Image (cartoon, rainbow, N blue to C red):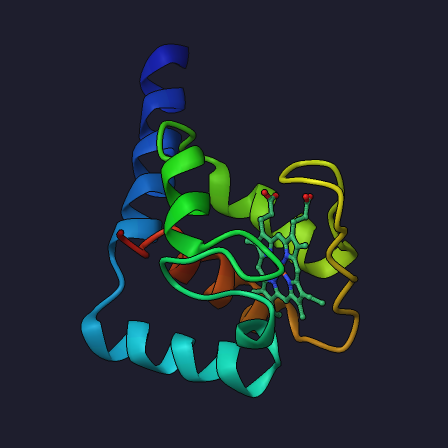
Length: 109
Ligand code: HEC
């Protein structure tokens, strides 16, 4: 019973990240633009922060990656990618942060 439950949880996490339509991806990108994310990040190249495709690649085996990214976006992050820290984003809504985290996991090189 227990292993089944856990694999269902893992599957639903994966589905969430993979289940963004193109329209949802486009509006998530606009959200990133509107919130200044794209002044430090690009999709496939490192600027100040890592390329989103590199983030997706790094965590692709982790079914729970998006919730880790939610924490990083909300509270800031340091030491995972280099010496420059990412500031916290306290004014973003939890829903927007979740959308951004799921979107980052869909970005491909
Ligand atoms: C001032 C520059 C800056 C801004 C603005 C910024 N980031 Fe970052 N971001 C960084 C840096 C630098 C890192 C690497 C931090 C580290 O090494 O832990 C990072 C890391 C990340 C990561 C990877 C976190 C991890 O756990 O590995 C994600 C996802 C991310 N940013 C998303 C966003 C989103 C979404 C926004 C907009 C709401 C945003 N960033 C705005 C600089 C920025």
